Image (cartoon, rainbow, N blue to C red; front, side, top):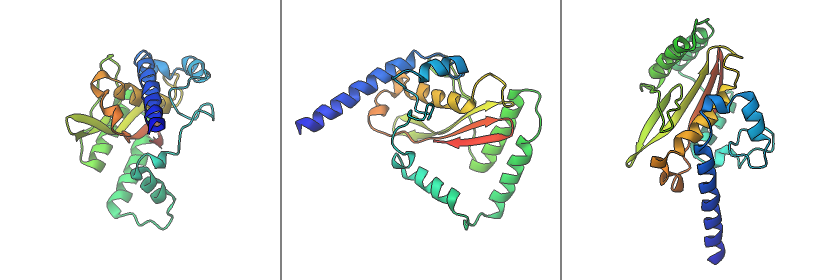
Length: 207
């Protein structure tokens, strides 16, 4: 029993240290700038687990929540039957995102419309306690908390913004859950969330 209690205490202490560090990170868009990202991720204390470098990982994502296992299984199932509506939505998404847009806001608007059509849920841009923001989220109510099940970061084209939207999205996720109002939530839930990084027509789905 004492060993288990000690292990839990050490985990909570490490978590508290990481939370404090992440709160002092710059905005996600600044964090994901290659110079800052390189410096941060090369340190021995890597707080954002994004497989850069390759040692910067934790346990397999599918162990955090069954939804990730279901997603991976469906993705790898070549015999999966997809209904007509989802096929049409996928083609519309591909064609819409393949277009050129004069700015990120317009691409963001078009992508939000697609997500709203797919999920029947409005996509909201959240401003966090430190005044940083993201490019879209979908939330669920969990007791008195709002938890994310989708987080989006967008670049109008590859190379614009001088950062990888997937790294920016990972930082956005970390920033959201290290807000003081979510401190207790970190102790009781794995906080599963799908993350979309979009750069021009290229869509990357993470978790």
